[in-house]
Image (cartoon, rainbow, N blue to C red):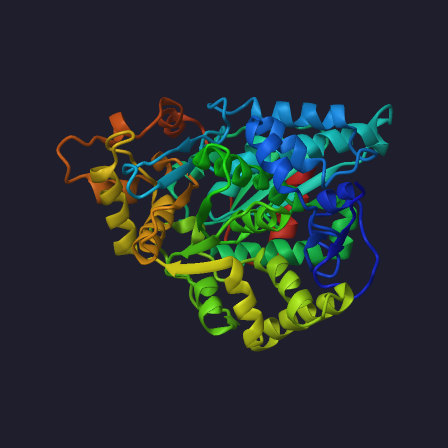
Length: 510
């Protein structure tokens, strides 16, 4: 099937190809790219065919619905998928830990941390790195050095995106990578994973400020047409459509694993910061996967929970520093994609162009007023697909403890604080629903070794617990001994960051 991509803010019918949407990352009007059509998969295809497929086979079936054969031939797409997931420590790529606390609760944990950087971002960014390389190699074939197309990838991270992007793009020809992160606001292991990569095409920028400051700088760089045309800036943050596309697969895969390939009630509980992970679940649901609800679990930075409860999308002034730092985000970038679909259905009467105009107006209002309101029926519409739970630091610690004490499959199962936000919300859902026919799949977004402080706070009182023995993999243990490559940016200022990128690109000779 043929697919094209449009901006969430556009009232213009012009569309982009998959390659253009992926390479450009962010639309020139500041919006995000969405597919022209969400393809629908029949129930018979789901349960008679797809339910029997491996992760890689499922990824292929899903991706070919969004990428036309004339852009990436089927054999090439299969090879890209195979190469992207060959780096994972599990043959299943995203294995499901079933009935973690026994069969009474039907609580399953979807382990998304088996990639090279021990975080869920690897599922998408190993694929995105290979995609960038594929498009560039095809374009640059037989061209002399001075005519080759090059990409400067600029991204912001609250922890895991940065290292996953770096590991997906390190050493790739004609690609330079700059990752901004807030100084002192990510875990030591996350910083070590990024800063110990010595490939010459990679540079981390430690920026004095918050993640939102870093994200704002990246967005401003994408909006700077001169800088963009000079350096051909590309995006790897979850604003990039290819990342959402790659994440859709594990919703289908885990549903089939939880239900043994049958059609049964399933709720997904997703720790949510930038909304990309759970948005992939929304696409899966709209494609036909019979999901009961997608449950947004937030930490104390709860813009999404507040929006679902009162219909106001409001930026707070201060980001709370929590035990789940990758979710310490005030503005959830990917939420804009969901807003477009809701605006189209509940305000624009199915008119794509009016939906784009509506979303654009909302985000102008957010910029000038710090908030916008949406109609009540739009919120009621969102609640058909979503529920939300806010989880505090104390509740995060209690969830890590609780799973450690009550897990039977295996015993003493250890989760990271982001996963704990999801598990606490899942337990709330289980208690409220009181329905033993529902499967609860809680997404585990990172390996516990990446968040030693929170895990130790929860578990150090147990005599039989040892972080070094029970949690820390040898591969991560050695990071602290390696040399680091960091560029400190003293102020969260877009001009200063652009100057640093210019200087570093000269040194990289890319």
